[in-house]
Image 1 (tube, rainbow, N blue to C red):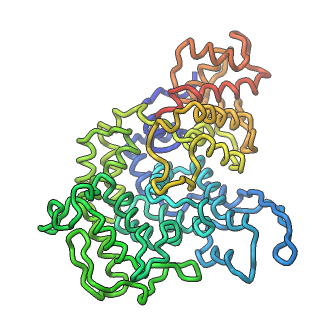
Image 2 (image 1 turned 90 degrees about the vertical axis):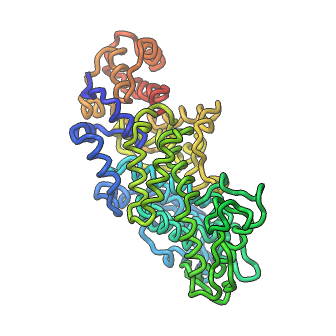
Length: 514
C-alpha cells in the first residue's frame, strides 16, 4: 500500500491549480493544508527558486544549420537558454543588418521560452504561478510563430510582462502589455499614427482584453449617445465609434530601432477624442490619451464581469455558476486599485464552494498532462524538440495559437479522435523516452512514494493510486493485460512493462480530467 492517504481534495487542488504532486511534496502539503499552500502560491516570488534556476541554467538545446559564405558560419552545438535573461536591446541585435544571422537564431528565443515553460511546469514549487501565467499568455496572446520580431521579443514578454504581473494589478498589466514589443508588433500598433490610425490593437483591447465580445453593442447602437448609460457617462458597453477613438488615443505608441517601446509625439493624434462617453482633452501630455483609455476600461464594470467570467471558466469549468462570477466580478471591481488585485480575485474563486464542487469538470491541457505524469513518476526531465512537437500534435502549440484569442478554454478541442490519439502517444512517448526527455525509474518512483509492488494486479493498483485514481477491478485487469503482465507474476525484470502500465494508467479518464 502506498503512502497516499486518499486526500481527494488535495489531489484535486494540486491538479487543477498546478500540475499534480511530486513524491517529495506530498507529506509537507498534507501537513500544512490547503489554505497555507494557497497563500504560498499566491505570494510566489518574482524570481525562480534555486532548484528551478539550476535546471534553467544547465539545460542545453541543440541548434544546427549550414554555413552561407559571406554571411554566417556553420552551427552545430548544444546551447544554453541564454535568451531568457537578455534585455530587449540584446535580443534585438539579431536584426542588426551588419551582422546577418540564419533564421534559426531568431527562432531560438521562442524555443528557449518554451523549454523554460516546460521545465518550470515540472520543477517549480509555485505551480499556480505557472497555471496563471499560461492563462495570461492566452488572454494577451501573441503568436510567436507568426513574426520573427515577436519570437525575438518573447523572452522579455514572458519575463517582464506576463510572469512579473500575473498576480498583480490588472491596470498595470494592461499597460505592460500595451507597451510591450511583442504586442506592438502582433497587433500592429507600432505603425499607428495620426491620419492612419491602426485599429487592430484598439479592437482587440476592447473585444478580447477587457470588455469582451459580449459587451460589443454595435449591432444595436451605432452612435455613442444611444448606448444605455452613455448620457450619464457610464455606457454599459462599447461600439465601433469607441474602437476608432481608442485607436487614435494610441497613435504614436511604437517601437524604436533598439526594440524598446518608444512614444513619438509627432505621430500622435492630439485632437479631442471621446471614448466610452468620456471626453479626452486635446493636446494632452505624452501618452496621456492612451493611459486615460486604460484607466477607463480597467475600472469599468464590463471588464470586471468579463475577466471574472474568464477566470472562473479557467479555474472552475466551462459553465461556472453565475453566483460565483458575480462575487468574483464584485471583488475585481472593488480591488481595481490594489497592487494584488488579481491574487485577491483568485483567492475568492479558489476558496469558494463552487470551486471544490467542480471536480472532474476540466480536461488537462497537454502541458498539464505531460508535467503531471513526469512529476508523479519523478524522473530526471529534459525538454526536447520532439516533445514540443508532440505537445503541438496533442493540441497545445505553446505561444503559437493562430488567432488573438489564444487557446480556448473548451474541453471539446481535446476530445477529438485524432487529438486523443496524440494525448495517449504523448504519455507513451514520455514513458518510453522517445524524445530524449528522460527515462522513468519505476523502482525509484515506488521508493519515493513508499509504494509496495506486489504481483501484477497489485502493482497496477499502486500505479493507479500514484495517478490519484481508485480503479475498479476491470480497469486493473485491462491495464495488467495491456502491459503484458501475467495476473500473478512478480514484477521483477519487467520494468519496461510496468513503465508502460504507468502510461496506460495515466490514459484513464480520472487522470485526464481534474
